[in-house]
Length: 134
Image (cartoon, rainbow, N blue to C red; front, side, top):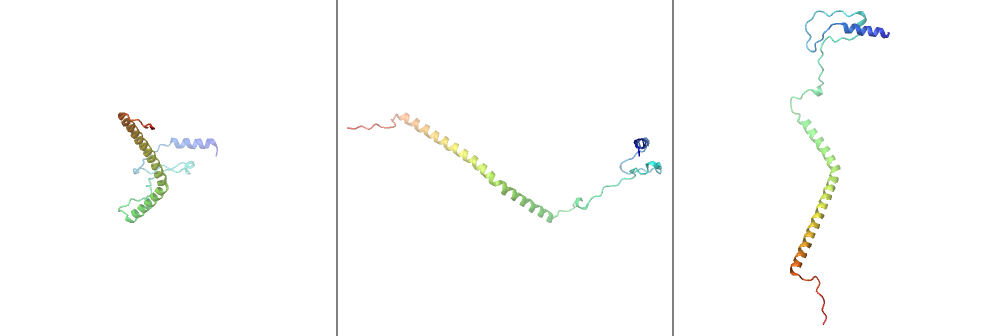
């Protein structure tokens, strides 16, 4: 089969004036016979609805057994994920709490020291009383 033969067949197909309507086929006259050279080319002649597998058919009632199995599987998946990630989450939270606690203790101690020094200056008492020997 040469290159010109393919081009001429394509040209013949493009020159045909057929209209195909998706959906319900309109009653029409018998289709014109295909030329002998075009018999091996498939042509859409009817609409074939897609088959719906039984697995994808819509369910009409709630399947309690399936729901219980799915809930059990989800609970198991969640338990596995939490057991894997929870230690790291707790450790990170404790690190943040520790840092907050340290800042709070240091701020309280700093405030207490400042208050103590402020009161000592009000009384103007010496921090160390000199030892007097007689």
